[in-house]
Amino acid sequence: MHFTPEEIVETLTMITRHHLDVRTITLGLSLAGCADSDIDLMARRVYERITFAAAELMPLAQQLEREYGIPIINKRIAVTPVAQLAAATQATDLMPLAQALDRAAAAVGIDFIGGFSALVHKGICDADARLIASIPQALATTERVCASVNVATTRAGINMDAVLAMAQTVLDTAQATADRDSVGCAKLVVFANMVEDNPFMAGAVHGSGEPDVVVNVGISGPGVVRAVVESLPLDADLTTVAEAIKATAFKITRLGELVAREAADRMGVARGIVDLSLAPTPVEGDSVAEIIEAMGVGRCGGPGTTAALALLNDAVKKGGAMATSSAGGLSGAFIPVSEDAGMIRAAESGALSIEKLEAMTSVCSVGLDMIAIPGDTPVETIASIIADEAAIGVINAKTTAVRLLPAIGKKVGERLSFGGLLGEAPVMPVNAWAGSVFARRGGRFPAPLGGLRN
Amino acid sequence: MRTPAVLTVLGEDRVGIVATVSRALAEANTNIEDIRQTILGRIFTMTMLVTVDEERVPFDELQRRLADVGKDLGMQITLQREDVFRFMHRI
Image (spheres, each protein chain N blue to C red):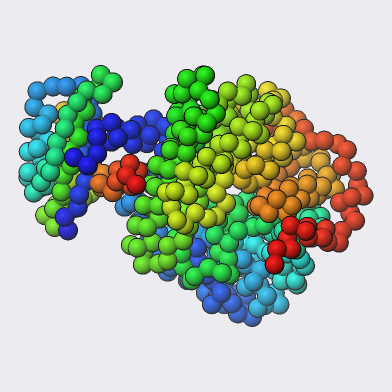
């Protein structure tokens, strides 16, 4: 036999008891050929392009699940940033494009489609401005469309005008979906150093450097890593902990690599990347916070959390990089508060603050994610939070993002509730000392010396 | 197409497990390349490396038949393509 019974049972236990799965198969799809000055014609082309190219995505993913005995939780699509299509038309109302994306996603049976997006890190084109203005309504009137805007890069610095515009857009989106717990904001990401091949929502886009159609895969497995760390004796040193995480990450990533190869080959499209991110779910035990606690930190957010998370993130990358030669996307542990039962507990107990989360984002992927804040938080404060997070990304040449959820009419201690993978978000207190001047200065935060690499 | 796969049977030991599972495999022209059984954590564990003759019986259909056999025996039977284990446990 090629394998021992122990190896086989280990794999089955990971799947049945520790939530091992492939988190997402995401089809990246260029819509460049759909551009037209007539927005209704363009919307029809977008719909036809997506429904034709992605017709096999869902049945194929289900077939792979059966053959390999591995759950594939999400099947999704990322498209060309829509602002690039919008440049072809003078139309101010971009709703037909948002609705075409939504209907196409529904037709092929997927829950989210990413790419209602713009890249404005150095300046805002006319089409970008129209797209940003359309975001609140697009997210309020569609179910599946996700929006993202890149406001900063290490090469260009931070576009502070865009930061303020996006802070206002976050608030407007919260207002537009106030009757549904601000769910629109769960589908809106403000990025620094956005990547072109991210398979995870809500920030997935299909970048301009990508082939026509590509399959990207996001791995998962916080539950498996937690179980492995918990099985170590309490006096195991941190080198031993890192080694155990690394070995586990290798196995998890190999699964993603296998699924990525098979999915791309069977669809006859390019193999893209495997994203090494540990992505938690609200299911008990499938939590990044609980890995940190299993490593010995009293409660996620307490002193030691940033160090523990850094060790975790690094070990996952080392194991993952050995398992695939196509590592890409975001590739780092995610810390979305609402989607992680341990994070929710930590936030509600007061152990985890937004400031600590910000520190954590300097050593992992991807940013201040799925954090509910009081609905009356001023726009300048939200802009300043986005600027802080963008600065971490720009200076450290890494991706950071902000997905804040202003809870309209709610105060600290109350909750936003989305259900499903988006989970529940306790409203967290926001530092009230942002002032109103810094965020309104506007202009460009210059690129750091670290961006001058040539 | 001949597809290598790993079949796992987990549950409480009882008479006739190997015979019943083997019969279902033989009826599907699925060859048993290797077979091992052991007790892991007090659970009877049988693992088989098999080759599925998909021209005779498609993979999905064999999985359905084995699930029925599992129900009759009161055991969990899983059939997965072999590459899962090769990828996860071998460099």
